[in-house]
Image (cartoon, rainbow, N blue to C red; front, side, top):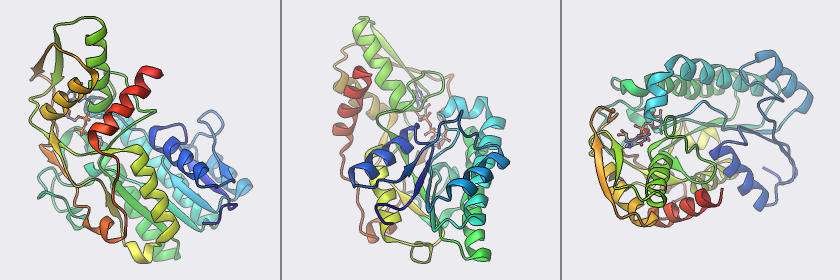
Length: 310
Ligand code: GFB
């Protein structure tokens, strides 16, 4: 990727796309194309084709997606599967038709079977039943990986895929109904602190384990792979994570400490736990020469500062 080549970031206003944009700009990439949803509806095939035909991007970061936490995924499964399938299919197909040199597709660690052995290696894909709370999203993301693979196989394209673990950081969604656990807990503890509330309610049992990667690390890994590796080197996809997890209970204690809240934590067992554990095996990524650098507590502190400031 040359600094002046044309790079399209799909989803540049989202948490991941905005982090990729910041990172590319800081590295001196000058020819970035970013369009808002009202300028280009990525579920509209004709509009996507017209955009690729007129702009002819040379590189594509496919970070546009309909995303959400456990409740949003289980409440709106039709939207999660339809929007994500359409966005991926339209962009990947147009990237092939209009000769994109390399594309990076972002998947998710929920593509793995619910009871996959831990930590989860890339080869565990499609070896068992998916977790029901996010099956629609997972099926769409699996389709995206296979779109890239089969276009590479049939057309000789260079479309690579990455599977990030649970991400957090600036520009995350902090809505309590639709967000992921990290932004939800930052907001809950902050509001409980400023309103002097005696308790904060955590969904589920607190026992599920999750791995968290700061989005600036995620962006750094994506750009590192785009700059240095092709599909022929990476294969079908590579996990992106830190290789360490913790329970939701431990996460809640950590966020409570960072925010400086002194009340109690209670658990609402009427809310779903989701998959019991979701830890990525990152040895393939480490072998490609990349490791995460932002520690969890440091990342939470930075995200909390961002939340309070925004
Ligand atoms: O982050 P999260 O919504 O999604 O929830 P998943 C992780 C865990 O945190 C679950 C618990 O066990 C939740 O019950 N939790 C506790 C909370 N309190 C809260 C809260 O206030 N809000 C939320 N949201 N959770 C998602 C998938 O799964 O992970 C997506 O639904 C995607 O498809 C994403 O793959 C990375 O980690 O369970």
